Length: 347
Length: 268
Image (cartoon, rainbow over all chains, first blue to last red; front, side):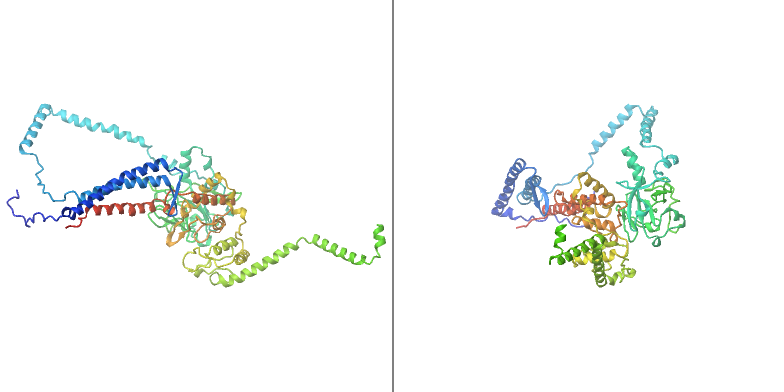
């Protein structure tokens, strides 16, 4: 098609081939040959060494390299096996670079389409097939088949409803929006379940706590779900150095405040609390919450304040919850009502 | 009795009687005043506190104030209730006095003698109610069995690993601060740090974490760091450090091979 047009830049043709040293100097070629054969000959040596290490070196033997402990056998197996493989590869590349011919060869391209005769024959065969199927005269056959194929997908799609219960408001209020915290539930230390006495908590203290009923949950999955929602951190700060809004005056005991331990971004547990700045930093994406200011976000991708758990003391002086969390803990979800979350400036 | 009666005019009788009387007086005095030794201790304590006060005035007061009341504009806290344990931790580890009062107090060569630290600790401890220097049975983890070590690990991962990493390798904090590496920390240092909350570290007081639990935590740190790591630990920092070296060393080597394969060699 473009054959008659002159190309905009004259075809320079092939560059004149420059020979390698190994092409013109037989001594250099012999040297390269010896090197490559030498590399290939080292492979059986490494293989034998591998076998020797495999059967000869005890599994318990250790090796100290760069101040770190290595298992002697696995280290040597890796070293010998790796060097054997490496030598095969290096020899192959060296062979290609120095001894295989590197003369440029021109391979002409040809067009991609089939010949016109072949294309005509295929179209004719197709036409014959359509005609023979009878779909031209009995049109409902095609429509029926297409409709049936489409409808067969419906059972597959409907069965996706098995993936979980429908998240209605009622179900959410019993599951994701509820924890095992309730009025009068004592705060206990995580792991040891020691109940926390308000008088024992000093300014600057951090406690990773859970509700006292948690260890009584025997079912493993239920335990983990309950803990994932109910985990809190308890901190004590100098009441004069922090902001406590009027609406939350009764939520704390002399500067002892407790917050959900679950980040409101994607739900990582957070306990990196800086005693002096009162900032709580999430290790996953560096969301930072100010526990001296009702848990508002001061940095990072989290969009909502950390939920605060209202606490007080019981008759024996132990810390207890006043109620469940007032807002759902953890990360956002589509149906979540975020109008009740604490915002900077709320009273 | 006859012996006493007949010997009463012996020339040694009067000196002997005198000696006996002196001994009796001494014995009775010792018996009715058991406070003697503790009075001496109290005097020694008072001397220690006085020596500590002098040391404090020379070494600490420029930031913490002459009466340890602290100086807010220097960022130096009030030391009234920090306790002797805080002083022992901060001074023995070289964190105090600070070389640069603006940054984080970092561990460095301690220039005080043990007696001087004891005096400083006694003085600051006498100012208020803070944790005292622990005795060995409060922090020594040597009696902890395997189950205790496992429980210590659980406590460590719950309370400490957020900052100090899961095996105590330390980690980064906001604003350029660091949570120090605990692998070489002495048991007493761990105890004192937990009880006093140095710098940004929160306090882990006995009400929530009793001494027995602290000992288990210390036993975990010691065991997890005594266990040989397989190969290079790369700081024990997990996938970030390992991925970095996989990229630099692994992919770097592959790139070098690719360059070697593709370069045009020397020509005649």
